[in-house]
Image (cartoon, rainbow, N blue to C red; front, top):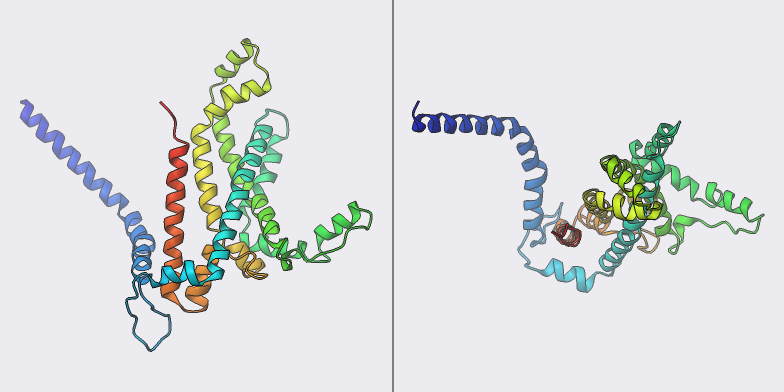
Length: 303
């Protein structure tokens, strides 16, 4: 058989594989277009208009007015932006570090460790709405946390309504969020730990490395890819904080827990200002994209 015939058969086989790949991926592509591509495009278009959900006035193109309004004329937006940054700044390092510590602990091959893994992971499979409602009861003046603190301090603790105080509402949501999601990232860290070659630890032991040196020179370098994935996913989830705020505080008190996503929903749907809500959503989308790219660049492996 000539080389030209072989080349044609190879090209025909590749085209057949490509068609099969497109056919099999088409359902996912259609869903992504309907529920991701089109909404993003609509958000971009609507953010430059003054469209409202229910209004007899036809929408008009207003240029950058919505963005100027956000940064120059909307204190609630600026407060929401600051709250979002504060939440992510606390949650990302604390949650990732706690998840890593738990992963190292449950990675030990001891009897009953599977039970502890299950207990830590259990909150992840529980609905965030259910968890938020349950913890709302814990945070009441006569709730669990005040009762425990009162017992520990021998009655000296003064009960407070954690979610009704501007100084404690956001820390209360931060505590809940870390507790609920730490199990998921513990499992991801655990998978990375179990992917490290045991021979590297044996070599470190032969060199006389102690526990910290084993972690620094063997464990941590072996977890680089896992670390990048966890940092990006936790950051995106933290910046998208919404459910806890919507269920527990409705952005209050005094906008102390309002976030970018919550403010966008509040303006776009509850106040029916879709143009302005879309502008806030676009700001959020660009912010998350830029932060993720910066994280990826800072954490990339050096050759």
